[in-house]
Image 1 (spheres, rainbow, N blue to C red):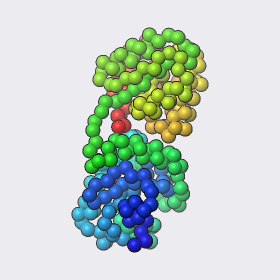
Image 2 (tube, rainbow, N blue to C red):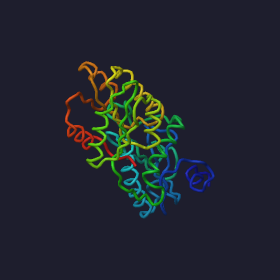
Image 3 (cartoon, one colour):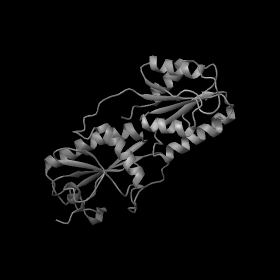
Image 4 (cartoon, rainbow, N blue to C red):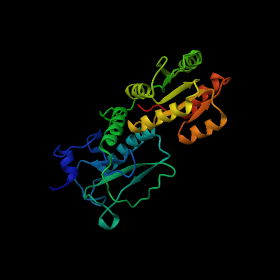
Length: 275
């Protein structure tokens, strides 16, 4: 049978598999509408919804729920589309029953009618690895873990008492905390964040180089396909710079005198464990 999904199922065509059970297979879409776009495919060949067995449809929806939860934790989208098409008139491109799971963000500028275009393979693989890690690729059983925060001191600033106080407060509040120590470059910080699979980076900057350091960390995270890692921080930062940094993507900035309870509350309310 000349079916691309059947060939993927049988291992004749390579794919990035993130979840598999007895009746379904979930793969990363190589022509994604958005980052994290996945396909839930029934193992039994059925051209469309009309021919699919009820048991396979039930399994596909159950798999979609598990994968959607993983997408929510890893990518933290503002929403998610669950799409399914039947027949050329409904824009079905592969005649084998499948569900599209498409993460959506406010203002992403995407609609529902898109021309399949190959995505960035490295980014697809990186996101797929993170989703597969959460799903464990063994029956989709997801295990809870604590939010993991990297506290870092970038640049030449040699004062780390405040950073250590914040790190200790977050740890005492039940979060997993990794402290990098002094004089870290943005490259070192991002490399550690990716290696440790953290959910957030907290930067402590007292040197006055906050505009460059925060922007560079955000840029490197995007380059590494880890733009979903939240960045927050603190230091002696003028109000006008705070607004500019938030516009770049920094989630929150705390100035001297902020209570550690306010920082704990921010992390608890805004950061979710990804895997």
